Image (tube, rainbow, N blue to C red; front, side, top):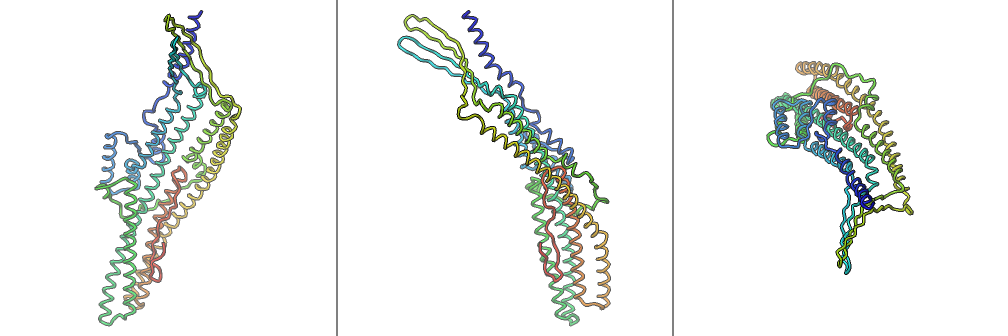
Amino acid sequence: MQQLSRFRVRVRLLCVVGAPWLLSGCVTFSPDGGMSVVANVAGHELRKDVVAIRTPQEAEQASDAVRSFLRRPLTADTAVQIALLNNRGLQAAYNELGIAEANRVQASLPPNPTVSVGRLSGPAEIEIEKRIVANILSLATLPARAEIATQRFSQAQLRAAEDTLRLAADTRRTYYRAVAQRQLAAFLAQAQSAAETATQLARRLGETGAMNKLDQARDQVFYAELTAQLATARQRATSERERLTRLLGLWGADANLKLPSTLAALPRRPLALPDIEVEAIRRRVDLQIARIEVDLMARSYGLGQATRFINLLEVAGVSKTKKERETGERVRDDGFELEFQIPIFDLGEVRVRQAEHSYMQAVNRLTEKAVNVRSEARDAFRAYRSTYDIAAHYRREIIPLRKIISDETLLRYNAMMIDVFALLAEARQRINSNVAAIEAQRDFWLASVDLATAVTGGGVAGGGGATTAVAAGGEPAGH
C-alpha cells in the first residue's frame, strides 16, 4: 500500500511538472515573423512589396532593387516602393513586430516550475527535502492569457501595417512637393531670364534717353523681385528633395536621384466615391486596431472577474528523506503542499474596477474614432473634389486667358499704346497665375494622398504646401 501511495504521488508530480511542457509544445514562432498581414495590406492597398530585412542577403537584394529603380526618373509609385524597401525607420517598426511576436510566445508559455532542495544535518540524523512547486493559477488561466497575447500580436501586426501606409503616404506627399517646387523653380528661372533681357534693354534705352528713370526703376525692381523669388523657390526645392531623400533612406551616390521636371497631369475625371464613409469604416487600419483593443479589454475584464478572489495558487510535490546517523536507517516521506492567499484585504475589487474602466475607455475611444473616421473621409473627399475643380479651372480657363492677355499687352506695348508699367503689371499677373496653377495641381495630388489615407489609414496630414506669388505691388507674397 505504501508503494502504491508513493506511485500515485509521483504520477501527480509528473502531471504537474509535465503539463507545462506539453502545452509549450504548441507555441511556435511564425515563419515570416508576422509579416503576412503587412504584406497583404501593402499589396492590396498600395500594390507594393514589403520585406523585413533580417539577413545580409535580403539587404543586398533590397539594395539591388533600389538601385534599379534609381536608374530612371522617379515616379510617385517608384518612390513609395524605394521607401518601403530602404527606409530604416520602417524596418525598425518591423523589428517591433518581431518583438511583439516574441512577447506572444513568451506569454503563451506555462510558468516554469520551481525546484528547491534542502539538507539539514543534526547530531542524530540527516534530513534531505526536495520540492517541486508549480503555479496552478497560472496554468489554469494559460488559455485566456495566451488568447490575449495572440490578440496583442494581431494588434502589433496592424500597427506595422499602419506604419507602412503612413510612410507610403508621407513619401507621396513629399514627392509631389519636391516635383512641384522643382517645376516652380524652373518656371521662375525662365521668367527671370526674360526679365533680365528686358532690364538690359531698358538700361540701354535709359542711356539713350528713350526711357525715363521711373520706368527703368520699375523694370529693375521687377527683375530684382523675381530673382529673390527664384532663390526662395530653389531653396525650397532643395529642402523638399532632401526630405524625400530621407524618407527613401538614400545616402552617398544613391542620393543623386532623378526627379521629373513637371507634375503628372490631372486625371480626366475625378473619382466618384458615394460610399466613402462605409469604405473608410471597413478599411481603416487604425479602426481595426481599436476594435482589437476593445476585444482585448473585454477578455482582460473577464479574466479579472474569474480570478478576483485568488491571486496565488501553488502546489508543491514534497519528498523528504531522513537518515539515522548511528544505524544508517533511511525513512522517506512523500506528499504535497498547497499554497494560496486568503482574500481578506484584497478581494480583487481594485483589479476588476481597473479592467472595467479600461474596457469602457476602449469602447469610448472606438466610438470616437469611428465618428472621426467618417468625418475625415467626408472632408478628404470634399478637399479632393475642390482641389480637382480648382486645378482644372486654372488649366482650362485662367492660363489660356492669361496668355491671350499677355500677347495682346505685348502687341500694344510694341505699338507704344501702353507704357512699361502696364506691361510689367501684366507680367506679374501672368507669373502669379502660372505659379498658382502649379500649386493648384500640386494641392490636388496632395489631396488625393489625403483621400487615400482617410480611407485606408496611415494618418491624414494637411495637404497644402508652401505657396508662392508675386504681389501686385511687386512684394513677395506671404506663405
